[in-house]
Length: 315
Image (tube, rainbow, N blue to C red; front, side, top):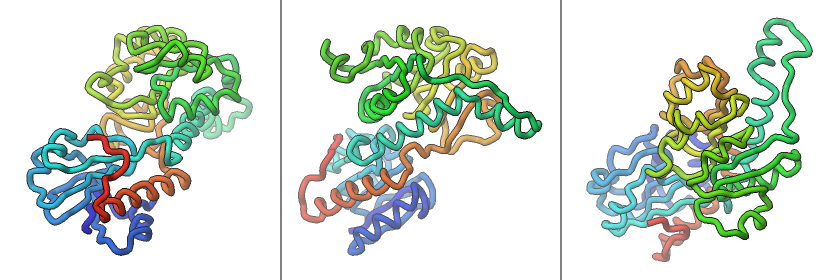
């Protein structure tokens, strides 16, 4: 089969080389960028961060599977694929090691913001020792917006830091709070209550039309001035202009971003003048998660080869 990888050859921790090694009987081709010009002649598309529109799918002649090498499918027109009997599948974060990897990055950001990593770098440049003074995590309230695989991986790890854990879950029952061992769980309508109470707000929920710009000027107004926002999910969850205004005016203390409004972001973007701790969308890019993702993607391609239905179909 012919398989198109919509990224550069070495993107995502060498994923393409690893999947080639797993499936040497198949032909793989990389687009070299996060775009797809055409799908003619390809049986499988691995879209990564590339949009997959109805117009693009109309030009496909043998495509049978759109297989994401991760969980995010917001750029794929699921209905258009379904109309053409093209399966769309992803790799859930909680089966590949991705959730564990992203959770670790989230804690790295919490500690970096609390201990003022930017201030540390400035102190070293100024040859100052013993400053800046940091904050401990113990006793702080962490608000998790989204309690899926990543949220639950964070819960497991944050228990050791002696923090208060609260969360927002789209669907929950009275037993969910006890099952997840949180102090409080609300629904989407309770987001402002979580923002009021939290010292750290961590976004780990899917990007959908309903969650677009979930964090905006209105929602930011409910946050503590001392609070930090960390986005581990998708850039579109946060209104960029509202975020920069909040940082510039001191409405919040700082932000950790692994995802952005455009990717890659402009390194000269003025938002980076403020207290922003940024990483280049590498939350799920670890040895553990890449191995897990390669195994899941290879398995689905083998299932397709045998005319079996792929796992984790989303359309």
